[in-house]
Image 1 (tube, rainbow, N blue to C red):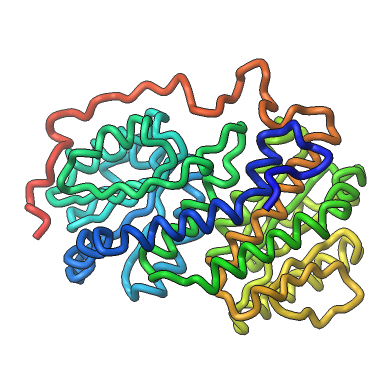
Image 2 (cartoon, rainbow, N blue to C red):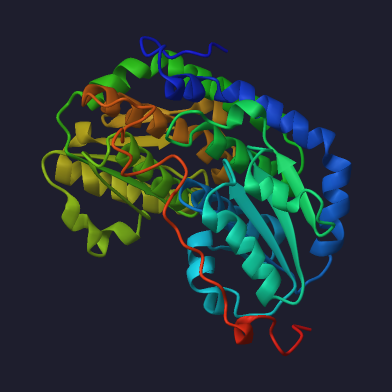
Length: 387
């Protein structure tokens, strides 16, 4: 697939969005090639019914966990928590309060943010038994180097091109999410191929419409989704917020949760995008909020993104029918590309440089200015042994 999204060929962000299908294929092949080692690491851990799995990262990397956790809970039939590194670092006694055997799955594009390494150190300090699965895009990063020789750690390195040069995480997010689903769920060539085909079609056929949306004078953009797609809605809102340097007000919520107060954000210059679930039960709630929003905002201001046909043929329904029958966590890998393109288009329309929307350095590609404070001696290992 082409490495460019015309006419934005000078933008690393544009290239990184468009080439994701190629990166996903490479990521899937890497997982297949490491399958024996990955299974040798995970199988004895998963055999323990008391194992707690925590998915962790900061910012977009945390939203990988938010999106994957509900799907992995269903897939594995066990508890899977998504807890940001920023929460673990600031409140280790609360978030690591149960001294259970733990698998900490850490996501990081560079692995150089202070919280990335601090969260794994804190887990080792606080918990009696912890193993680490590191999913990262940079083998030169601190997180990779910290764990490369640790016998209780397994590192899964993403393809080199997943280490985005641009400010916003795009292919790094989707590659780490897809790899998580393949690591725990097994190889799925059909899904990877369908995702790639879908994104090629989005880039080819939806760009003009997306650019028109960016030029339509919207001041607020709302993303809604249920289950795994709530985490995706959060990542979508962040992409637009980052790439427009906060110029566009963004919000996210679940399809049901939005009515409970957050609906107050709506005005006549609001665009709403609803990620439709592939689950027939959940989808009813998604459809209800689409209908309600179209009544409030007008049909043209609400886009339903779906893998299944929509009953309302008069509204703006973007149906990705190559993904019919694909579960929500996999759908998220393709759905997010629409949000990435929308953020990119808004950024260009507003006169920002997508690769560096904060030239004054107020927000950085890798977080700066964080001081990691030491734990008091009494806050280290639990005394009950966790057994």
